[in-house]
Image (tube, rainbow, N blue to C red; front, side, top):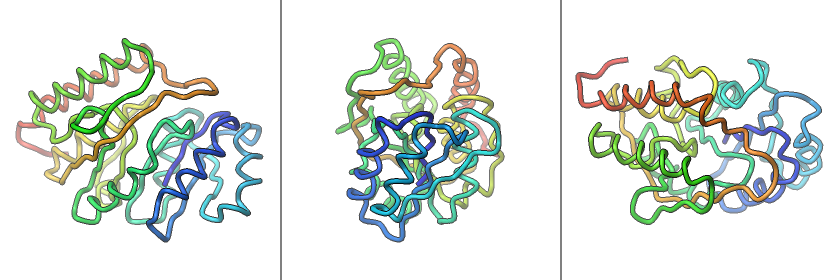
Length: 232
């Protein structure tokens, strides 16, 4: 499990306790990926490690930012399946085991989906919610992507997929969309489970919609072409 963080000292304790308690799969490795030693998350995690031996700090050396933290964590993870979740507690850890079961059954990408039956989103800016839902449902119904939620990064990936593709994302959370589109175009299995996403209650979001929108649109249009002949 890879959890990118940026000054999540206020959120990380309940997040980590929830992740470890609600995930029955073992062995379990939880990588807390931080950019710099002064991050408020680091001392809190160090205090928790005696209680939660599954948790390990991992310093991102690829360059600051959420994308590089996720890439660094994906590289460092040693398990055959790697899940990304956020350190702010917005993702529902109770859905991790169902995602893992689908991966063990053959899925190379498993998405936590807010927009399929049984999923929902609680809070968050209206414009961001509307754009995310529109992108996910249009990619599903028009582009043929076999999931309803394309923009979430609550995703589980197989190492088989990660070893086949080169990550091209350049700066934001479009990584989940990129890897899902690439997996589908390669003919790999993509699956989803319903999940509830809840907006953070403490700390500051690092999501930058207008800065990252062009990259989302790039992968959105690649996804729209998913019904075309597939390739890398």
